Length: 71
Image 1 (cartoon, rainbow, N blue to C red):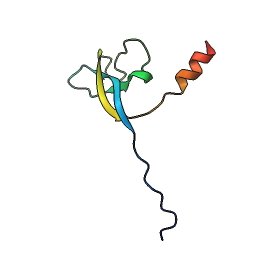
Image 2: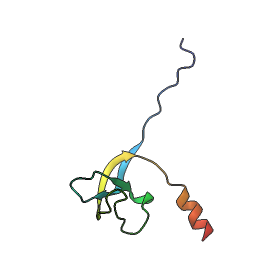
Image 3: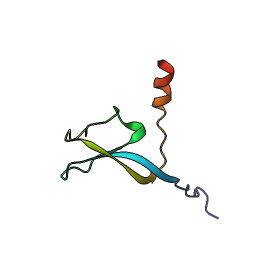
Image 4: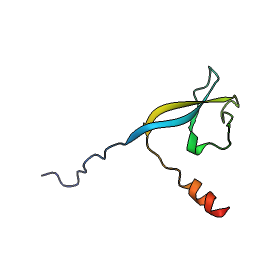
């Protein structure tokens, strides 16, 4: 028996919309549900960002729900 051992949790992934920096020198990206504006600028180099789809671990942005209730 192995006490204290936890079964590893399954990582759930999904195709996710992201915004990626268009600069060749920058590899910054942000999930669509975490963006700060409709068409975000790169927070690192301030270049334009382009929309892409990537397979990522599912992460929910609970602050969007809080902001919607406050309005």
